[in-house]
Length: 231
Image 1 (cartoon, rainbow, N blue to C red):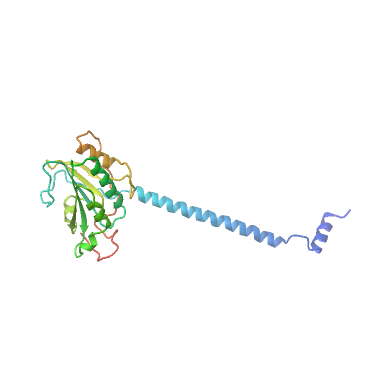
Image 2 (cartoon, rainbow, N blue to C red; image 1 turned 45 degrees about the horizontal axis):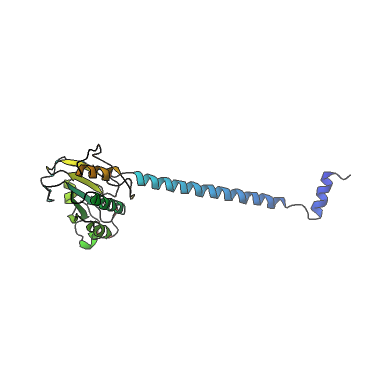
């Protein structure tokens, strides 16, 4: 009876033995593919986590004045609450805010004086401010849209983030400050929109401040063209 070693030698001589280096190379390639797949999964997971963190991180909510600023040139409506919303005309996150504003106005028809003030940096023309966001806001019934030259009005109301909404009563007292989206660039029911609607309709609410999700008003974060500017 031939020994196992002799049988292996015979198979090797006949060319029937598998190529051991080739098998090792195949195992190495398989391991490399698995490692590459794991790295890609880790990268994708990290990117998703960063996007989620960015989406859920609010901007600077500012310190809204309790009383209507005396130096402001924005008219305070003596017959109904006044909502002032400050926005950057090139902030993609603000599209959701404008959409929520449209829903808000539809829920309180004729009960609210709403004004959207878009930043117009110094040394820029109307074409810099008149974006699709401007057009969308201007198309909302009951909403007045204006350009905020060099962010002066935003500074008077201490607004620092695009999408900052401030609701004042007819007596000039601050009723609400914050954002009207649930996250950055996300539409849907949210505490800010609900609180403003309740206040306008004289309904009780415990929400008087919410986070603001949007780009900064006072730097070039959202600026895509045109000269750099400072407030």
